[in-house]
Amino acid sequence: MKNFLIISLAFAVIFVSAFFIAEKFFPAETYIAKSFVTDFSENSFPAPGKENFEEGSDLAELLENGAVLNDSLLLINEEHPFPEDYSPELIDLGGVFVNSCAVNAYESISEDIKEKFDNSLYIMSAFRTHEEQREIIESGNEFAASVDSSEHLSGLALDVYVKYHAGMGFLDSEEGQFVNSFCHDYGFIIRYPYYGEEITGIPFEPWHLRYVGLPHSKIIAENNLTLEEYIESFIPGKILYYNEYFISRQKPEEIFIPKGFSDIIISSDNTGCYFITGKQ
Image (cartoon, rainbow, N blue to C red):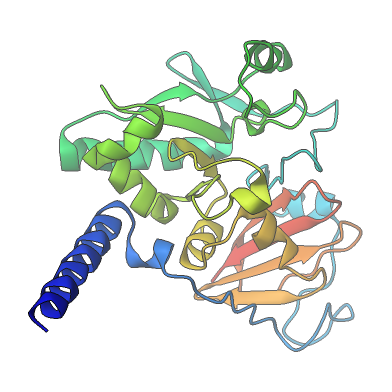
């Protein structure tokens, strides 16, 4: 009986220790599995002029009326490579080129890390040319994406580090733990999460941030999704409401937007559809 109590106590200590280690590295919303509730509205796309919806518009008309077109929700993988004519809009951040739609989010998380930890978050690699990606493949990196399938060609992927902590060692730093736990509050996701290798085909990369924008990053993190799963979960022709946002994946021919929403952001998903996001 005494031995049984000692063994039980030992298992309890191990369990509690494991829990606190997990909690240190990942907040509850990123390691507790949740069901992704796709609470779509009852109706698919309305007929033009239907109550509560603006009339359908084409992409050019929406852009003329203030909508913003960016690359935030491009799905980039071996099954969905870049078209040959793709050319991202880039901004130079001290010699590192980043997709323009991700710059404000990176600057925001960098400023918070500086304030919280008195340390700097650096970008090791962001945009790469086809030639640079080819050189990485030829160097023997077995996990490098093929030349046309790397997110780095978009400037949306940021490989980040802090002094003395890069690669898997990034998680040994407080800054790395913060980034992995809260980057979704800034519009980023861990593109290749520890739970997603079976979907992405790429092992856990805690240093590889991918900009998708809000509220998409929060939904993805809250539900332990990969970007592949998130995009595929959206039925084309349905509207999802999330807090003050609406999100819809639509065919490009005619786009419908609920009334009362503004700050419209439109992004191709690289599968033949567009994601439309608006905020009340």
